[in-house]
Length: 311
Image (cartoon, rainbow, N blue to C red; front, side):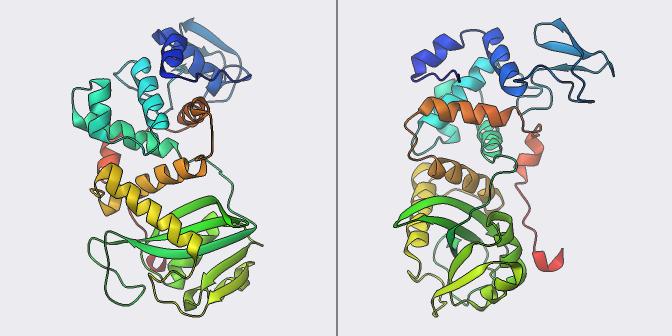
């Protein structure tokens, strides 16, 4: 049975020492027994607390080696506090707020931690959307004049996919794209929507190739002017995203860092009905121990946007 704290006090009582944190991560990472990350052998020795040596390849490793927590100089208890705080705030945490709550010495540390945790919010191999899915694109960064599909300095174009659940919004996915051309839209859509799905769009010509890719395609309205409320579930989701970016982060999100914030918004939105904050805490920890180490210098430059037409 999953051990889920329900309150901050229960979380602190459950993880009072570094050893209790290491043991918990060990159970999350290797539920069927410790496995060597280098050769996958199960015959390992425990040299000291949570430090292991593989009997086969002689590789030494710890419970945090090769995870989001690799080479951290901060206590694991502080990381657990950060994850609890991030998953228990309905609107998310800002770097300044996290710095104050945890007593971190620098804003940069809090910023790095939040971006690393946002990386962990994307589960490897997560399921693509299916059933009936609405698709549209929105600009993030303010109103943008001009024709659809062109670039604009300081603006980001984001594809939003919403899996419908009757009249309700189900799961969502979001992808930043270079422009609204078919060369960029269709590959992005294929990453997040399962073939065979009924895809509902406006009449934008770039979506005309969906049937050739194995999707059913329904044009809701022939008009394709960006910004019109043609797909209400998309419109609502986009409005919530923009409100969240402005409210929690004061809109101070660079285009090359936007992907990380989209990951966080998606993580929160898809779990908005969860009544267990402890389960969110558990899920994020679970995903953190399977995430490869993230270097701070890689976070600073953000995630480069690849134009499908030139790759």
